[in-house]
Length: 399
Length: 157
Image 1 (cartoon, rainbow over the protein chains, first blue to last red):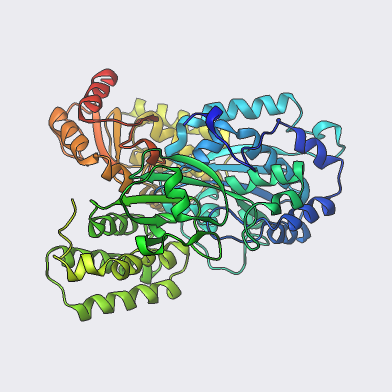
Image 2 (image 1 turned 90 degrees about the vertical axis):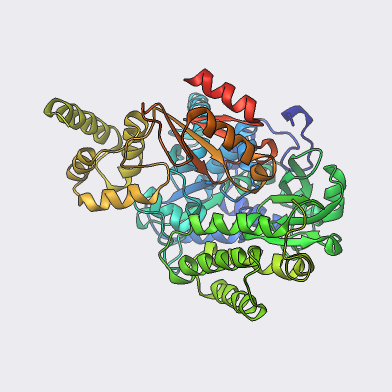
């Protein structure tokens, strides 16, 4: 899909570089925060933490040095919305970072870009240079005395876990990307021990539009608990895969129709760490309060073997688990073994039930989001497709 | 490593430390540049980075071993990475992998004897709408098929 064909009511509703920065610097910090609180914007990376709360905490923290980090370590299988935002709408993302800098009182912004996106780096650097020339970055931005802010780009090196905010901070500090214990949270003790806000690319892009058009305007879109719109990265068995901007609360069946999906058997919502939704539940809505996602929507048609899908997901987690906490390091290996047992018709029902219990244990005992969410697909695929996987022909149907 | 090579490496790393600063936070960008230029981070470079940042060499090694894009063994000049995650898998990754393996005469995870090519699988490249996707050095090639993949390899040779 090309940029000119993208349609959307919020993020893709049109924006000119620098406009919202101009508006921001003539407004007080409190008023900006008020507008964002009014919008009820929640984090777009998947966890859904209210952005206004995060920024209020960081702006209230007493420190000379603060940081705003844009999390562009988009690694969840099936997610590619940040790629589109950064390549086609960098003005939304970077202006959002400048606004964040203004609100929380940070002078430094860091874009943490995943290693796989190295090919974007040069054009993004050039874009930042243009912003510097236009005084949208640098000292006394747009003539606002004392408002200094600049952005640097740091690359990841191929580690999925670095999308977790504390692992990302560890990586920026030059360490292995292993998640930290929380508390203390990054809002008080983040990068180099300073108050830090880590925001998703799409969250920052939303902020830019909210400042331009108002929190109330933003809230018109979506549902009560999930305001605004969401970029969905649609892939898998459909005619028109790509990034779609839709209001929260869109039904899965509506989305399937829009993207031209036929004979759909299942939809994976939220990537490998999300849940697998069978045909019988296609009237569920995409929203924080129902089927939530950081954007990933993967569609499977009637011909897909769900056990193979699950195996692919579990292999992913075994590789990407950082290995510092036991539930995740060992648990994912055990779940993958279980999938292979089913594949070889060498399993007992009682053991599969034990593995589901193990999955639930991992959800509560793992240290970070990776291990807490990796059993989701195991549990939901085995439960929702047990006719095919366990009661049918041992998972050999489909191709 | 020859003494001359060692000296050149030291000079190079000193320049990098000057560019990024001698804080611990500079470790990753420094290692990334060495990796990009030399296609691996040799033992000597690890020791020099450790000395200049004032940390233990084991710390440097531990960081390298964590990230899949950093490595201590010499890789091919061209690193061919094929996405193995679900949508690329469904779009025909397997056939592409087989074709590349046959063409280069090595398996995934290996490097050709002339050190021209390394083959690796990677997790999601963020090209799920245009799979199967290849990442060759820093460039992405979407929507490849076996024939196209081999053609691309011949072009970058």
